[in-house]
Image (cartoon, rainbow, N blue to C red; front, side):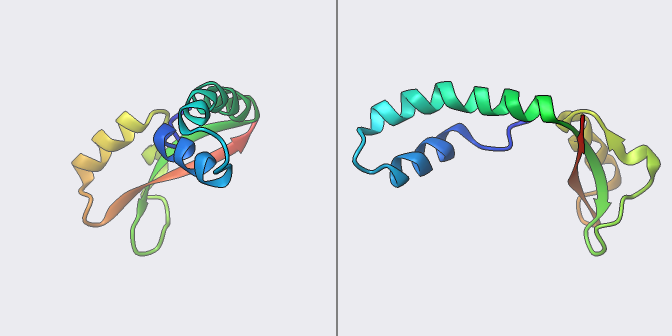
Length: 93
């Protein structure tokens, strides 16, 4: 799975929510919790990347469905990020 949630942002948000807990404790717990959440997500969904038109949100074409974010970013460099963007496609397993 790609990183839906940034580790630092996740730890900061949890720390803000549980403000009575020590920040370093929350950071350590979040480092253990986030990978477990990501694994659970990966078991439930398959993530694909699709190149979409910025204005309409419609997929560029059938060939614009990619398995990795890196491939999507490379594809976007070819077609241009002025008209297209990377979208996410989640399908249930």
